[in-house]
Structures are given as C-alpha cells and as structure tokens.
Length: 57
Image (tube, rainbow, N blue to C red; front, side, top):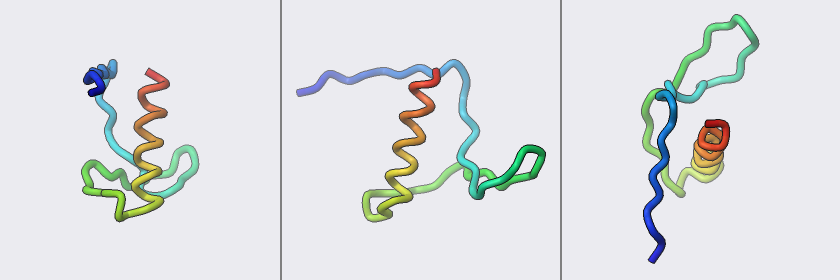
C-alpha cells in the first residue's frame, strides 16, 4: 500500500481562469467545482493544473 504524501503550498491558490485572457483583462475565476473522470478532458486539465502548481511551489 502506498504511503500518504503531504503537500504544503506556500500560499493558497485562488482558482482556475474560466476563459483565456490577455494581460490587463478581467476574467471569471472558478473557485469551486465538482469534476470526475466522466468529465474527460476537463478533469485531466484540472489534474495537470494541480501538478503544475505543486511543481512550481
């Protein structure tokens, strides 16, 4: 059985941008959502985003 891993981020992340934008534009931010493997590419993109946040911390 794999051992649990604790990840501590130096600061809380706000959320995901709901759309693409350019510097200076206002964007909608997704603060909370429920996704599962049934959501296909959206679910994969969220998992990849978490990996990038952890990697950059």
